[in-house]
Image 1: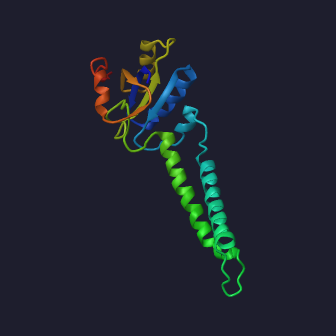
Image 2: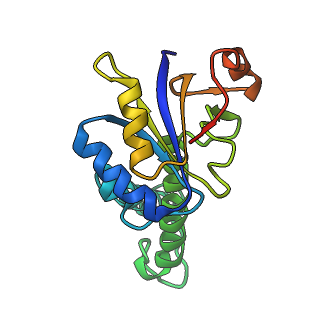
Image 3: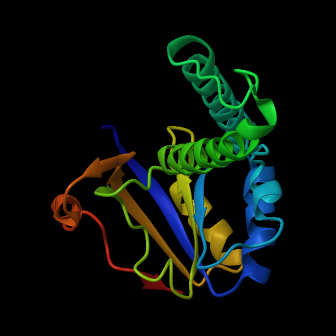
Length: 197
């Protein structure tokens, strides 16, 4: 995985964070991610994130469950083991509806949950770099990726002027890994402590 540097800013509340995110994007800085302890209304639009396609995936999984149920029961009752039960037809569609409904819901729920976990990289055992120890508690944290064109001191001062209470430059491996958080300890000597301004 690539080792990258980030300017990380910590904000006290969402009223300071939202305008800062908009201004960071307007300045053309490369916004890596924003971490909040709870969902913030309007943050996805401020970050320029497109609408999720998870609902489309849920529909596809549901359709797959419907097809699996209908094809499975049709094959069993018409081809594999046709039974004459009181003169009823071999393909009694009204009798298939409860099982079809249940498989549709099952496929949709399980498939959407697994897709959500895969897209957000939150499977069991997955670890990611933690930019701030309180990012899931009471702090709102913004990480800006440092590119060759980035003036680090300028970005730090820009964030402080726009409501950031703490600013820090961190080095971290991009992405995620399996295992323990001790993997990031090798960066402790190059990651300074939080500086409160």
